[in-house]
Image (cartoon, rainbow, N blue to C red):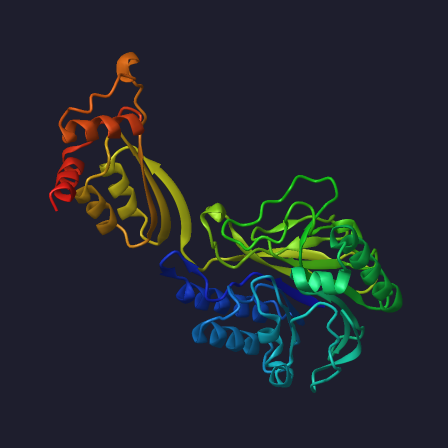
Length: 401
């Protein structure tokens, strides 16, 4: 069988003042197209479906339309779990209607999904944190351990006050009990979760810039050795770069977000994961490139003309632009830069520090003219940089208001 794994859609996400919805429409179309071209039998979406607890009408509409298209109107099961950006109650709310379209929405950890079926597949077993599917045309069952994100309150509810000590132990034991009971070599065995997971002893994986953090110290760090040996593939969400923190034989995959959502992701390539699986054998997976969306770029220039030229040559981008210069940018220079490109998210002027002369730390003469005092103060606070004419005009305008 073939499975598509995606995560971290963040529908409704903005980049500062810029909406990303048009790009999200395009990349959702791309994911649906890949699912159809690959003829996948099952879709897993590992959390952070929306960017916040109260998504816009447009984001919600895009979400439901995309799920319906992925499900082929009930022919292909789609399983979506909540992440740390999602409201579990909102994810659960449309469940009765979603079932009619073959969509399984899971908002809370330890959720027990009421068995149901369509003419194309059915849930044959269900327990807290576990479902087994029988899909038409596939002569073996598909078992899925599911663990949506749990916030601080839910962690304490499920794992007690000592969650720092207990979370790995409890998750490991819970997953092992389910795997021992249901996951033998006669079916395909999967785990999907929205967690901060890493190899024990490995280098710390950075959470995306601007992402609501899951890992605080080591309190919420889940180690990949907690995954039961029966699990053939683990579909994770939360980290936005594609990576395997498992092994070649037992992949534990962050599939990546479909778009670059912060400048810490500048230059990243985005993917979905396509998995080939059959009972009792090592799975294989392939990264499928996602091409939609504007690139995020961090650039630094020391000359206005060079910056303006580059901006004109790279229109389909979002930019964090740093300009290093000997003087502060004038209003005309700022205007020229913003007129050159419609995707400048951040403009960061950086005045090069000038070395202070040895006698710069002189005694202040308060009887001097206020203009001279302001110039001295400005110079002392800005690495020896002189206040330019535009700044002095503004100072005098404020002084005489």
